[in-house]
Image (cartoon, rainbow, N blue to C red):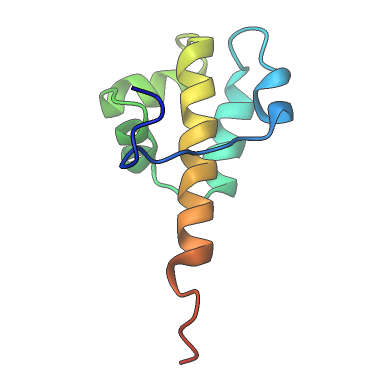
Length: 92
């Protein structure tokens, strides 16, 4: 039911996922995690994988699936938007 009144509609810029054509390189995985201010544990939880899996992706021991990369980017964008508007209307 895509039009259900209680369903949250989130719109993401098309450019966010347009550049994803395959697995990211380990430096991109590490860089995006650090830029988003997340620990390895927090990042792993965002994409529903064990901590060790995330560590292997950052170390280049395993390739992060493109779908997991896309999910990670979506989730960090959503967290950024949520944090930005968390205090909306509160003036101190």
